[in-house]
Image (tube, rainbow, N blue to C red; front, side, top):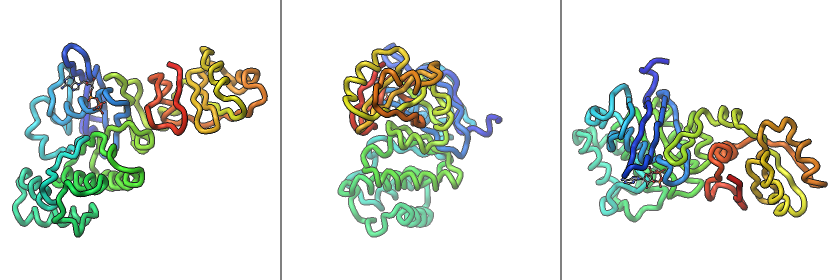
Length: 318
Ligand SMILES: Nc1ncnc2c1ncn2[C@@H]1O[C@H](COP(=O)(O)OP(=O)(O)OP(=O)(O)O)[C@@H](O)[C@H]1O
């Protein structure tokens, strides 16, 4: 692939705050027309990376190319070619839906006619018909999010940055939001989205797992799961709590977490037959080897589970 095939390329992208690296030596190569995810917990450097890639923040060191342009330096040129939806609702609560969109249209220099046409199109597309005069501040989380996406895409950006776009919406709105992202992607938009939700990360074509500013792994969800250095076994039966305690003291066990009525155990892949290895340790309980999930990949990369993503208990060993 040549440079022209990538929407984003970075080498050694680094940003320090007060001597501490918020983002460290990040290498990225994000192909055009894909949805790429940054997966990681709060504070791992997702927003700082996105701010550098949008030209809002200068890197301390490293090379950045966005849509073929070099940053820092090409911020102005890129402004019309990229869209950015921040974590917080960044529109005006005391302006109506239409006024907010008119304001954005003005920033992008659309004339009255073009603005009117585009806003009508967006209001329909993002299911805001009948709400044109409603104050943005009085809308639900899902409606605000659709308005924010309409605003971020008003100027037909080639590249769209979404910083934790679904943190304020319920699961159903999240699914619907992702349908919209796939529609945009199908029309050729490249999307970079940050998230701490595994189900969102699993929808991305490619992703980087970030921890404390460092990329721990990258690839498609399937590649990451296939390359994981562990096998996954689920155990059911009595007294899983004590079993967990004894298993996590074994160096061959990377993690054991109770998920509902099962214990999900990650066994290092140098154990050739994890079921045989576990057998004497689990007594009469039943076992089954299961497919790895992206969360398992996350645990093996970082030693941690993301808070709130598993059902049930989330204890682990680092
Ligand atoms: N302007 C700043 N000054 C000092 N430290 C900062 C600044 N911006 C970010 N940081 C620090 O850099 C680290 C990465 O923050 P960042 O916001 O990029 O993480 P994140 O993964 O986006 O998390 P969140 O979702 O909570 O924003 C954190 O330790 C944060 O405190």
